[in-house]
Amino acid sequence: MNGEELRRRYATKERDFSAVNLRGVNISGSEPMEDIFIDIDLSGINFSGANLTNAILAGANLTDANLSNANLTGADLGQCKLIRANFSGANLTKACLDAVKFRDTNMSGANLRSASITQTQLGNTNMSGAKYVSNIDWTGTRVKGLVLKDGTAIDSDGDW
Image (cartoon, one colour):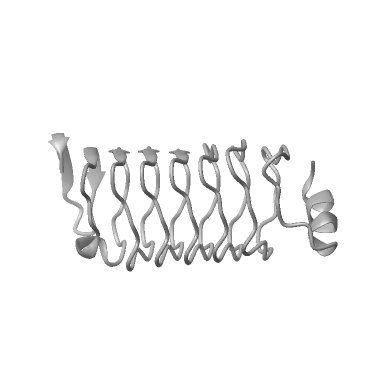
């Protein structure tokens, strides 16, 4: 499916895209809020600037996805694969990022206010300039090469 087809289906009020192949689709700046993208391959998708408020992306493969400056307020990203994903400047307020696999992910400047990030794996994740990092419950999170707001890199062999 391409971006035009997705927009057409969205205009007809379709909201459950869990069985659709959206790999590499460009829907930057669109407003697919409250949509359902469960357990699908969204690798390479361009959601930059999109309004994904309350979207359900649980279990999705977001490898190489661009979610820069996207509004993910209240979104469920639990159990997602976020490898080389770009969340720079994204609003992740109250987002669920539990049991997520972050690797080489850019979260610089992201707003993480009241986000849930437990039981995750953070490998080479850039959180420089991210907001509200100190208020997150990191229970069960394993860390390697996490770069914080002040540029500090953290490695932890066990839970952080």
